[in-house]
Length: 530
Image (tube, rainbow, N blue to C red):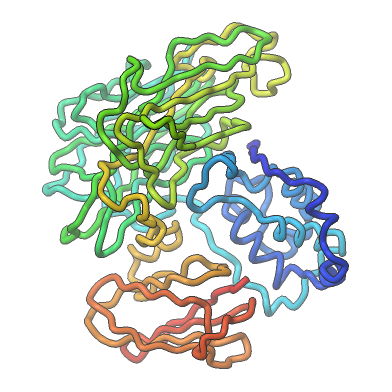
């Protein structure tokens, strides 16, 4: 699988360090310096059973592949993060700093020493089959289907009754492809009317009813949809009792005769959740009226509203998802308000069909009333495009097949409320896959996030009573660094540690042990300060 990421890394970044820094670079080792970088940015794909071509978990794994790692991070191919970070910023960006790149390059150049293995963080663990977010509240399966993509791509829609007897608020949606080799993409809809019927004609793109709503998606490189929320404010999508769920499946040409049974896993907020804000997912900016001439690189435009009017209602954007096919070269999207001020939303300068999905903002991006949305997309229909499905190049127009082209920008958005501009969505317990796995298990302790960190740690845990929970931080030598008694409430609790000791001194980089005392029983974990 090819991955694309453009990082502006010039030679001066590596020649401009001081002599002292170069001397210190000889002490860089895997256990203390490289493993935290690899585990945070690479091993999520590069592990046994992952989508990466080789594992990067153990020291031997990384040592064996050190040349490939050095080459990939130096030329910007890894880790994969298509958006241009100089255009707009997103939550949880997979981007290495110049210091992290330098550390890896210096480590390889100095023979890739392991260092003291007892100082290395624990190996990360990964779910290689089934849902990655833990035990779902509801799993729905499409019937076993044999692809009919004989002369064209096969688009089918499966209707699955939810069986829900009461309304529920969705916290996360995860699509599990039954046969990842043939599932081009999946769109997940809710049909509250329960009137839409299964359509295996080969041309079903999803329901057209206004009452049906999109709640999640799967595409190459995309992650589960996890909405932010905590005990005080929750975001997500409501599913009504008796609703059907629709899986709109796309099987590409060439998959004929292969079978698939894709699943969707739904995770709900507690029924007692209040202060809930609905998130809408819709295709807003699009262009279906273009053709790319052979042996040409061409750029096309799209805007919303299409009739030249302006947006009538102020709204807040939580995430954005540009979509193109194999001729895609670049795509961007921005808004211009009534004062002619521009708000950059996303720019993908080097489109890669195999790495796409929703990019979510740390703070909602507010689209003012009277604004217009604009997008430009470029397509490369030449032999220089290694993804070009035609050799020699042929005219390619907008259409439904993979060999056709698309120009779409999906939005995750919500009705504007005062203060959205300053609302930090990352602070609302926006859980990672590992943390979601914990919250649906039976563990009392949930998570320490982010980990590794250079700022602070958010501890999340659930408690079965209102009481005092003692916590402590100790260093690798067993010295007590920080302790605190926390007043807790029934259910989910959170505590933030700013990485300072009891006397207020910032703790140096290294490995630390945290402990929480639940009813006389201590539970421990490891965190890395960098």
